[in-house]
Amino acid sequence: MSKGSPISPSLMATKSAGAPKAPERVDRPTEAGVDTAAAASPVLGPNNVVPPTVMTGSEAIVRSLEELGVDDIFGLPGGAILPTYDPLMASGMNHVLVRHEQGAGHAAQGYAMVTGRVGVCIATSGPGATNLVTAIMDAHMDSVPMVAITGQVSSGVIGTDAFQEADIVGITMPITKHSFLVTDPNEIPHVMAAAFHLASSGRPGPVLVDVAKDAQQGKMTFSWPPKIDLPGYRPVVRGHNKQVREAARLIAAASKPVLYVGGGVIKAHASAELLELAELTGAPVVTTLMARGVFPDSHPQHVGMPGMHGTVSAVTALQQSDLLITLGARFDDRVTGILKTFAPNAKVIHADIDPAEISKNRTADVPIVGSVKEIIPELTEAVRTQFEASGTPDLDSWWAFLNNLRDTYPLGWTEPEDGLVAPQRVIERIGALTGPEGIYVAGVGQHQMWAAQFIKYERPHQWLNSGGAGTMGYAVPAAMGAKVGEPDRVVWAIDGDGCFQMTNQELATCAINKIPIKVAVINNSSLGMVRQWQTLFYEGRYSNTDLNTGHDTVRIPDFVKLGEAYGCASFRCERVEDIDATIQKALEINDRPVVIDFVVSPNSMVWPMVPAGVSNDQIQVARNLTPEWEEED
Image 1 (tube, rainbow, N blue to C red):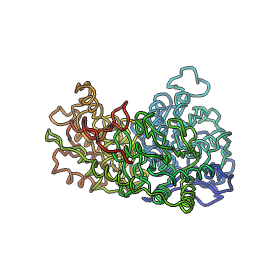
Image 2: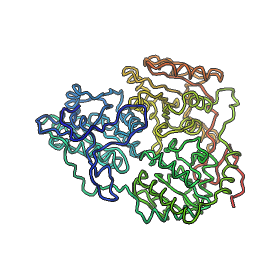
Image 3: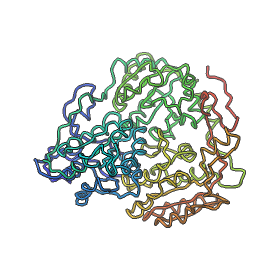
Image 4: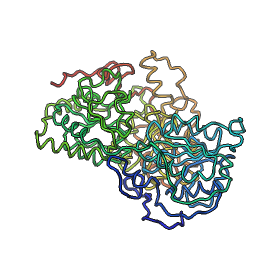
C-alpha cells in the first residue's frame, strides 16, 4: 500500500464478517441536499499525500488503485494491458487470475455486492474487453459499483482496425455510468479517482477506464490525491422537505398502505432505517427480487416477494393497495405485469436516488429525489409528527385481509409424479442447514426463483443474483467474488445445469486460489424455465431445451467428474433421504470448492406465476388455478 503520509486516518473497509460498508471518504462541510459522501471528498481511500513522483502510466494505474484502497482485483492479462500487469506483480493487492474475462466481471460484481466496496476487473483489448460487456451490462442493470480497466491499442493506431482493437468505449457507453479513454499518461490519477467516485456515488454502477498501450508505457508525474472535476455531476441525497411532509400526510391518511421496497435500499445500506419506518407505520412490506433480505423474512410485517413469481400475499397487497410507499424500486415489468392494471387504486410515493426512475413507468403523486439512506429517517420523523397530530391509522382490516391470504396461499410445492427429487426441497434444505449467515448466489431461471422463494433471508447482502439482465452463468464467478470479499462466510452458488456450463471454468480459479465456494447444481437436465414456458404456452413442444445431463440420460458432461477434474470435492445426490447428509458433507469441507450434482425432476415448475402479458390479478398458484378472494373493503 501507499507509503505517503496520511492527512486523515485510514478509512478502508476491512474483510470482516460484519455488515458491508459503503465506500468511505474523508469528512468536510457540505451543502444541503448534495451527496454528503461525494462532497466530503470525491476521492476514495485514505487520501494519503503523495508528492510528485515520476513513473510510467502503468505504474500510475497500480499506484492509483492502491491509494483508492483496493485490496482485490479480478483479471486476465493480454498484450494491450501487459504493461500494467508488470508493476501489478510487485503490488500488495491480491490479483485473482480468472479463466475468462466474463468471470472477472461477475466476480467483481459479487465482491461489490457483499462488501459495499467498488469491485475491480481488468482485461486486455479487443475480445478481452468485449468479454467483459455482459458483466458490465449486468452491473448497469442492477446498479453495482464496479470499475472495469481495459487495455487499448496504442493511440497512434486507434481507428485503423489494429490487431485486437475494439471501440470498447463506444460499445459500453450505453451500459456504464461513464466510459473513459485515456491516451495521455498524466490523466491516469484523476481518471482513476473519478471512475471510483462515479461508480460508488449517487446511483451506483459500472465505469470503464480504457487505457491506450502507449499511455501505459509513457512517463508521467504522479501525485495524490488528484483533483476530480465532473461538471454537472452532483447527486442529491436529502429529500425535499415539502415532499417528505406530503408523503407523511398520505401515509397517515392511507387505510391500505404497502412499503414497496427495491434493491436501492440495499445499495444505500438502509435496512435499519427501513425497519424503523416499517414498524412505525405498521404497513405490510414487500421486498423485490433485488431487495431480498433487506427486511427480515421472519418479521410479521413481511408479506413476501412481489412480481411474476411472487407470493400471492405480496402481489395482491400491491394490487389492492391505496398507497405505495416506493423506496429504491423502479416499477420493473416483472413486478408490475401489465402496467396500466398495476395497483389501479393506489397513490404513489416514490423515493429514489436517480431522478430518471421517478415517474418513468408509473407517475408518482409524491416524488422524492435522494438517497433512501437519508430520506427514510426524514420520512420516519415526518410520519411520527403526523401521527402525533392526527392519530395512527387503523390497519386491522387490511392486515386481516392479508393474513388470510398468507394462511390460504403459503409458498409450497407438490412432490414430482416421476419419483425424482423436488428441486424446491433441495434448495430449502441448503438454506435451512446453512442459515442466514451464509451467502446465496443464484444463476438465472427456475433455480433462481426457488432460491428467492424457499431460502429465508434475514439480512441484507445475503442474496445475490442477476435481476435486471438475467445473465446465465452469473452464479459461479459471482460466488467466487463474494467469497473473496467475505472469506469467513459460507458461500453457495445455486446454479442450474444450463447456467453452470457457461462459466464453470472459474472452478479452476477457485481451486488454485483456495476460494472454497460450494456449488449446488440443480440438475433437471434442461433449460428449466424455458421448458416451463414450453409446457404452459407451447403445448409441451420442447424445442432445444433438453441438455442430457440428468436422470436416464447420457450425462454429458458428468458434473461429478467435471468437478473432480477442476480440483473440487464432488458428489451426486439423487435421493430425498440423502439430501441433508450431502449438504452437511459439503458444509464440512472448507479447503477446496465443492460441487454437488443434485439430480432433480424436470417436471417441477415455479409457482405462483403471473403469465407474461396479463394483469397481476391473474396470478396462478398452480396450472390454470387462480386464487379466489373477496376484495378487501
